[in-house]
Image 1 (cartoon, rainbow, N blue to C red):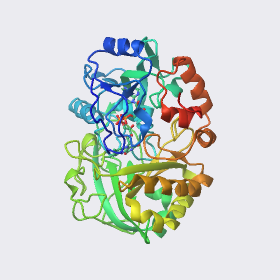
Image 2: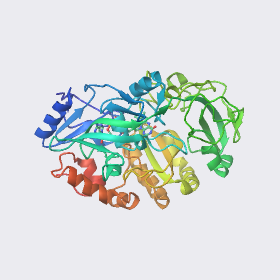
Image 3: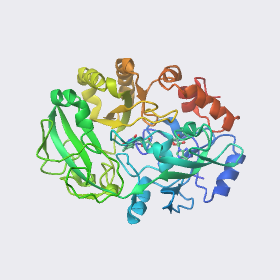
Image 4: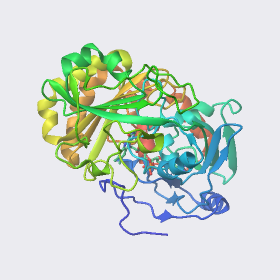
Amino acid sequence: MNQADERNWARNYRYAAPIVHPTSINEVQELVAGATRVRALGSRHSFNAIADSTGILLALDRLDDAIVIDPVAMSVTVSGGTTYGTLAVELEEHSYAVHNLASLPHISVAGAIATGTHGSGDQNGSLATAVTALEIVTGSGELLRVSRGSTPDFAGMVVSLGALGIVTRVTLDIQPSFTVRQVVYENLPWTSVLENFDAVLGSAYSVSLFTDWQGESADQAWVKSRVGDAPGEARRDLASVGTMPFTGGPSFFGGTAATIARHPLPGITAVNCTEQLGVVGPWSERLAHFRMAFTPSNGDELQSEYHVPREHAVAAIETIRTLSARIAPLLLVGEVRSIAADDLWLSPNFERAGVALHFTWKPEQPAVEALLLTLEAALAPFAVRPHWGKLFQTDAKTLATSFPRLGDFRVLADRLDPVGKFRNAFIARTVLDRAHP
Ligand SMILES: Cc1cc2nc3c(=O)[nH]c(=O)nc-3n(C[C@H](O)[C@H](O)[C@H](O)COP(=O)(O)OP(=O)(O)OC[C@H]3O[C@@H](n4cnc5c(N)ncnc54)[C@H](O)[C@@H]3O)c2cc1C
């Protein structure tokens, strides 16, 4: 047990609970059964109190990390402590892939799916949409196996915010490996981007726009195309996940192709970024923005992100641009991504295709939190849903209006965790709408 100064990745949150590293699922079961309050801790990449507990925290990084590929079911099963970085290397070695990655591979699979973490791509659901089965240690210490298609309420159990139990094993859909080329375009005029918004985001397998929300152009578009999607191009992958063809070329909706590799933040070397300039490589080395062996993003930062339905995206972006003078002093960079709709109750993309509007902030939390109130009020008309793992101010009453299954999730949590072992102050504030005892 470790009672040192344990913090999250961004170091803006100090865990109150001591952290325990069980080495077997049996030990997880015993620890949970004997605890009054307990939660799982992933790779600590969330920016708020979501993971903490008034009891103990279980970090699963010392569990058996066997990765089991089932080529018949086209699935892979990993431990609750496995990171996407480790999984991606193993899958690619066996010529398989998952459908998408977040901006960084360093995060744990279980932690990412618990918060609805996503990458980009009109046809790509969040990472949680690949989950076909879970093994969960519930409050009594029992090991519960649940799966898509056979467990009622499975759609409520995947994006769980850690409130249903300790996920010890996760099974994900896989597909044959595919190759991707990444091209970065610079200085895309906002008029062109917003007039052609669907075409811009739909022009490749995954498109991200980076912006400081100021001025007349978006700074960068990161365009990740599956090789073989363009007409006449040889297809290395066998899957038929179709997207509109992307042919590359020197310009992209008024932006010009970068001639050297870029970091999303101006003035920072691209050494920690995945390879660009159209060099074809495996999905595992292109879909994330940042490379496993390096610190992702800036390192000294906070983040917030708001999902809006696709039809409101242009108006929401225009609204944020009108606030850019207030945003700029606190901002490192913003990002715009698209995500497909899903059926997962607490997913920000529940039953709607969405666009995620992201903010990487300077580490000035009180000022950022004050600004978030303004930002959230401005985005309220657009049926906005926050990213569960990043900073936001929205309370449970408002969240209940934007997440229509939040009430059903409370019932599910009461059923799986009747004594509230997995509750914490974050869950009380955002889901239960009551003070944490
Ligand atoms: C630099 C950086 C870049 C990021 N980029 C993206 C991005 O591109 N897209 C995006 O959507 N998000 C992004 N995020 C946010 C990040 O993906 C989420 O916060 C994610 O939840 C982090 O996973 P984790 O393993 O660190 O979880 P933690 O922060 O450790 O925990 C998050 C939640 O998961 C629960 N949990 C963890 N493990 C388990 C388990 N085994 N069983 C049950 N519950 C569990 C915890 O209890 C907690 O509630 C980024 C964060 C950083 C720091």
